[in-house]
Image 1 (cartoon, rainbow, N blue to C red):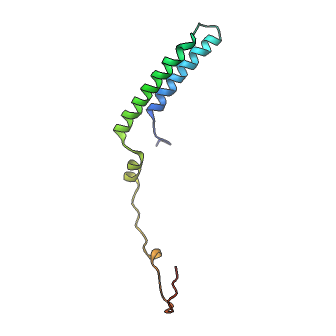
Image 2 (cartoon, rainbow, N blue to C red):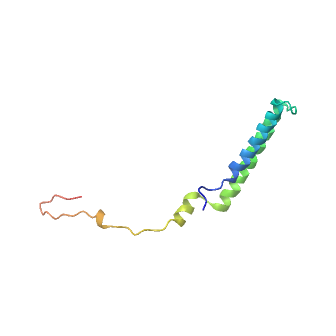
Image 3 (tube, rainbow, N blue to C red):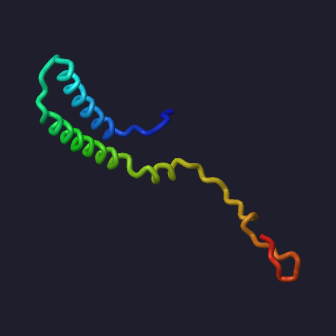
Length: 95
């Protein structure tokens, strides 16, 4: 059983952030030369594709509250604790 839900939008955005970090780490290490403006298209593409993936996932799965309400077993309601009793006869109520 999964401990948490899978969020593909976060995965896509994280991959693009990782690619940008690797590009600048390679530049800092002297492996290759990365221009300063490379991060903008990478981050913009990551945000757009991550948002699209999140929208598709939301469209397929629906809202989390609707899913959890459908999977939560219903338990019987105990109405005895909600009753107000007037046993003393003098008008005072026990809650």
